[in-house]
Image (cartoon, rainbow, N blue to C red):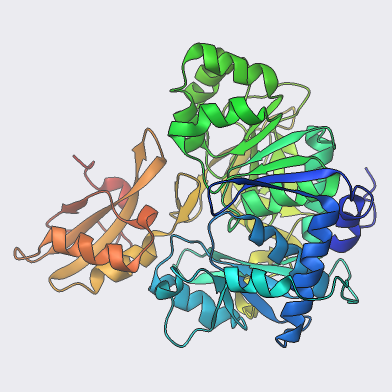
Amino acid sequence: MTARPTPSLVELYDQSLVARRDQAAVEYDRADGGTGSLTFGELDERSNRLAQLICSRGLKQGDRLAFYLVNRIEIVDLWIACVKLGVIVVPINVLYKEREIRHIVNDAEPVAVVTTAAQKGEFPADVKCWDIDELTASAIGMPNKRPRTELRAESPAALVYTSGTTGASKGAVLTHGNFAANARAVAESWKITSDDRYLAALPLFHVHGLGNGIQTWLAVGCHMKLVPRFEYATAAALFEAYKPTLFFGVPTMYVRLLDVPDDRARGIGQTARLFVSGSAPLPAHVHDAFRAKYGQMILERYGMTETLMNAGNPYDGERRPGTVGLPFPNVSIRILAEDGREVGVDETGEVFVRGPNVCDGYWRRPDATAAAFVDGWFRTGDIGKCAADGYITLEGRRSDLIISGGFNIYPREIEELLLEQPGVREATVVGAADKLRGEVPVAYVVADSSLDVAAVLAHLRTQLASFKIPRGIVRVDSLPRTALGKVQKHLLPPPQ
């Protein structure tokens, strides 16, 4: 297949913002508890006014602007405005605490962080914060004039932070071309059109919700319902009221949806045509149970912060549980042994990816960028194998990555914080199986008898996002190590 030229995102969005300007675009929850709605033309105008305001505050192409917000329509306004200006967006996970936020802010050096008045307290005093409500109100009085910015596929659109095995967070530079190519591939592979109805419950600070959901919606011009978060207690009623044809989720969401009564689940499944799962492995038993309850086979796919979408099970054809399917359009995948040779059928090796979806490297980290690319191929760090018919199965990470409810957790970050605590001499963190979240972190420590485990956990909660907090701290006399001192995590006793 020959790749089509990849446009800037403005060109892609105009297929909806301009060509469908009078069409209903989005329904969303307002702060006052009501429901709002906008056409694509209104989205275009709102983002133009916001872009003019941002520009009046001194931001120019190439500058960074961060946001720290739960899902709300103003994130969409901010994203489109920044895309039009060529300003680079830096999403920050709203579960992050001051320690994690400071690293991202120091590294990306955004002009400001857009957040709420209530959330400003999460930020160091020296970080400039803009109140999203004040920003939105001020934009109303600005002219409805689109900025004139020279944008290309190579223009950076976002810095999305991911962590390495050392726990040092790195900003993946995702370009207009990355997002545009990804949106086209998603729409083509899953047959998404303007006739669809997309229920957006994934957090927009994550590439799953921002890179797949928002970009594809803007590209094809379908209708979207944006909700602040996925809430199990109201999920069934939300599906029944909105009647989406599309839903993108993570395994934790699908586990929760299995609790919906059978008769309601069957009705939801008759309206929806596609449920997609990503960000973490989906257990085979969840596949089977969901199909029996909803009458729909979940489509599992494979993506990363640095590459957006790499592969997916086919829309038409076998959706094989336990696999991530076949490479996406214009994406090439190869699996290599440690010596660099391409492995054979069903032979395990490291997954390498090449295509217009792959990021432009890491922000101000030439060392990390050089290590991540081999002869133009991005090394994912994932271990996998490929069947004779092309289906790819992932078997784990080269690193010790823990994926909990769709969020990445790198043990080293938690280990270093544990080692800062009085009385802790050694520490290691591993992933333990969890029925709901897939995995959860568990810490093993060698510590003085006076160690107060409850106090340590209380301190960690002030320093780390909730999903990174160990679900238990196991005291051991020593950590099993190799002759070179590396902890042999597989030899640790199972947590009780």
